[in-house]
Image (cartoon, rainbow, N blue to C red; front, side, top):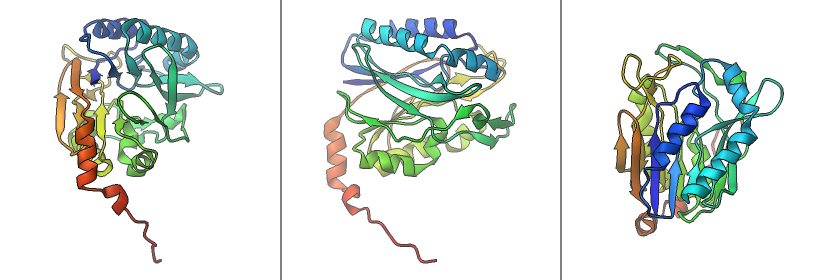
Length: 276
């Protein structure tokens, strides 16, 4: 059983992005079952909220096309994020999982929204202006183990993953579009910490784009890349630092069980009362 993560340089045109992802899927090795993970915002890395809203309003169309891809290639797919329209002018950042028969198995809506100031060309991000925050922690069964769903900025909030572990998670999925300054500072540290403290695999598929290079987004943004697969011991087992392409790693359930048996953190974890 294989885990794949696609590092991708998304553009503003959804149809073009979809076709290029389909080309990447056609390159996969024939070994099945496999779980393919896409980055955040892979379908439309927009320059304006109006572009995202246009995609969000057609979310059923894109869901149908993603389901057909899964059936065609016989893959499980964690489809990064897809904007899903809700009330007027607003949408969810939805992380969808499809099985190899094209059935939609889960939807996680990004809980923690990126309203921050970053020392890059964009400067200020205000994701909550048009994105509705999710509320539900989502873990689902799969042939690869129990999958815990999250998105990008979520990785800074360890309590989310603590809840996922309590729900039996074995593999944590973190599709991302990380900025370059925050990526250099925190990307590897945060993802390895989530793996170590949860004793889970972590799969983080990221967007990659640099201005004035052969792999640039056409919205002016820059993204960090460095897609990772991290072991339950916190070891980076696969990484792609720059450009587009696949990383892959087989699931080793024996290692997962061994790590948890030799260091039974779940049994040792205790609730503490805080004195004020």
